[in-house]
Amino acid sequence: MLVRFILSILTLVVALPAAAGDFAIDTAHSSVGFKVAHLVVSKTRGSFQAFSGRIHLDEENIARSTVAVTIDVASLSTANEKRDEHLRSPDFFDVESHPQITFKSTSVKKSGSGHVAIGELTIRGVSHRVDLPFVVNGPITDPWGNQRIGVQIKPITIDRRDFGLTWSQALETGGLMVGNEIEIEIEVEAVQVKDSTGS
Image (cartoon, rainbow, N blue to C red; front, side, top):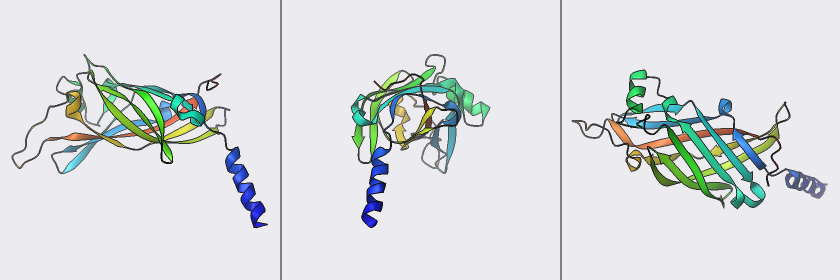
């Protein structure tokens, strides 16, 4: 009886479908956030409200997968309009000259129990390699018949100075008004593009 039970569980696991196809990020159920040290003693959080992206996913041959994301920098919000305007200015993101942040994968590979997307992150016209470790949840079928996946991305930390975001002020007590390390937190839900075959 125990053997039969174990075999039935194994059969169920094997039968679970691998996610495959082209998926568009559902911005209503996704988020792109960041946090940075402020005056050494605390952290300020913010997010981007407008972004889009495409994921081509092939879990049976993960090397064929691709990721491309575009963020509208002007959509940033830290819940303080004066601060947001400063962040949009040439002191930081310089939105008029560099309206978008982009990430485009150059390769995707298996990593432990998940995957990692290796690609170019471009901020303020400067590009650097970034590794995004992620795990795919799903696919599932929503009530409207759409295939959906969740992409659980491990938070990453970048040095803003690497991308030309160098403005800050030294404090008399030591440290900086704005920290140099920015932690990026991304939550993704994506819906399969109609007629996507995954080929």
